[in-house]
Every structure is written in structure tokens, then in C-alpha cells.
Amino acid sequence: MTIKVALAGAGAFGIKHLDGIRNIADVEVISLISRDLDKTREVAAKYGIPHVTTDLADSLAIQELDAVILCTPTQMHASQSIACLEAGKHVQVEIPLCDVYKDGQAVAALQKQTGKVAMVGHTRRFNPSHQYVHKKIKAGEFNIQQMDVQTYFFRRTNMNALGQPRSWTDHLLWHHAAHTVDLFAYQCGSPIVKANAIQGPIHPVLGIAMDMSIQLKAANGAICTLSLSFNNDGPLGTFFRYIGDTATYIARYDDLFNGKDEKIDVSQVDVSMNGIELQDREFFAAIREGREPNSSVQQVLDCYRVLHDLERQLEAA
Figure 1: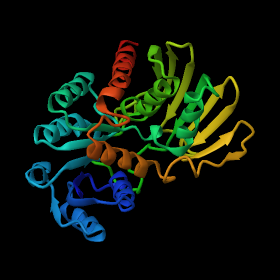
Figure 2 (figure 1 turned 120 degrees about the vertical axis):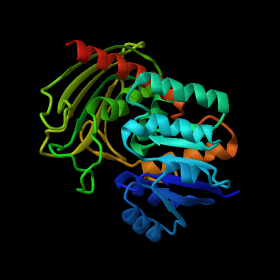
Figure 3 (figure 1 turned 30 degrees about the horizontal axis):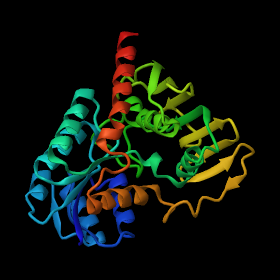
């Protein structure tokens, strides 16, 4: 069976999905949705996608469509996920699931009602570097004592990863912190029971905090310190230091190093070194096998409960 897919959002991250899907057998992207019709047509032509539209509803009306991948602005994620499920389509939504907790709860409730696969793009669960650490933990060979995480970008203007103007504003808490909050609980195998946050000044134009610090504690006693910045004019990205009882690991996207900065070979951890491709493979496998995917809406919902609590802390400060 060929799984027929629509992809919404032909920006930098949508293109990463299109590149990953090229490597997955029996999956065909049949519809591309984005705001700028000319740019959307250009991307569709490059990837051989026959249908182009600016309206998700047009794609959802395609009878043979099986699934949708949403790479749209944060503020649209929950409502578009609900639209996909209501149309009887499986859905994978890029992180974050929502920026209002009750909206995420609504997606989770509808998923249970429909039984469709609903997955969130918590890519860190799939990066070979983090998979390697996860396998060590599952085998009882490594236990996290502390995670120290730095998420650093230079975003003083509202541009995307391709250097193009964004039509929406990114967010340190609901987007970038979500990666680490979910990964910490997932790797510990233990829920977060304590969370604290402070933030720096609000940007006068973007209206968001450009710097943030978060502390987490899991029920099993492990702790996490997360520093986030849109002001960092230096190495960009997210860098994870796992400090454990038997080793120290440093994960930089799909690459992994030990505490002495010696590279660890993770090329055999999975069928690809591309975390986005592995994430998409899990989505399509779950559809074929009629099962819950890793990083399902149900599994990641508690992450958004923690973010909601942190937002209330910041608002009260």
C-alpha cells in the first residue's frame, strides 16, 4: 500500500521532511499547502507533487489522502491537527503541539475518539545520538544524574533558517524548550515533578523573551538545567550534555561524543542518520501497523502540561 500524504508548510522544515520522505518506500506526497502560491508551486515542481493549494481544507477533501504532515506556524498546530483528525486523516504535527495547553488536550481527546495516528515532531527522540543514549538506559548500562542543555540561536530579527522573513514569531518556551522538556522525561523514564523558569527582557518589537533559564526535576531524582537564547551570536543549535553514573555523553543533533569530546560512532543505531527521516519512518510505520507511534500526542501531552505551568510562573513573576 502506498501511503498518500499532504504536507502543509513549504518552508525550511517542510523541505527537510520532503527530503526525508524521498528515502522512504511506498510513500507519496500528493499535495502541498503553503501561504505563497508561487513559492509553493516552485517547491512542488522540484519534488514532483501534483496538487498545490493555499488552503488545508482543499487537501483534506482529497479522498485518497491518508495522512498529513503539518509544518505550519505554531499558532495553527492544534486547530489544524483537529481538522485533519476530523477529516479522518492521520496527522503528524511539528513541534510544538500547541501553545495553549487546553488546545493540546483537545487534540489528545479527539485522537482517542478517532483512533487515528496522531504524532508530534519531537525529533530528539529519533536522532541517532539520543537513541544511542536511550538504548544504554533501557539496557541498564547508564542512568542520568543531570542533563545540561543549551539551545542557542541568533534571532534578533524575525527570519527563518533559510534567511527569509517569517510570517509568525518563534517562541523559546513553547517551541524550543519543548524539545528538552519532553526528551528529559523520555530519557529518564520518569515524569517531571518540579519545574522553575526565569526569563530576560521582552524584545520591544518581537514581543517575546529573548533569553530564558529552566530547571527541571524528574520523579526519579534526575535534574535538568536548560539555557535558551535568541541573542547568541556564536555556535547555533542545541547541545545536550548527559551526566550519568557510568559515563558522560554530549549530543549535537545526530552526532554523539563522550565527555572527552571523542566522537562515538552512531551510524548503526538506525537505518538513517537523519532524525527527521527517522521520525517520518515511525509515523508511516505506525499507520501501516495500526499502532501508537513513539512521540504520539498521548505520550508527549505531559510536556505541554509542564510548559503551561512554566508559563504561569513567568506571567506571575
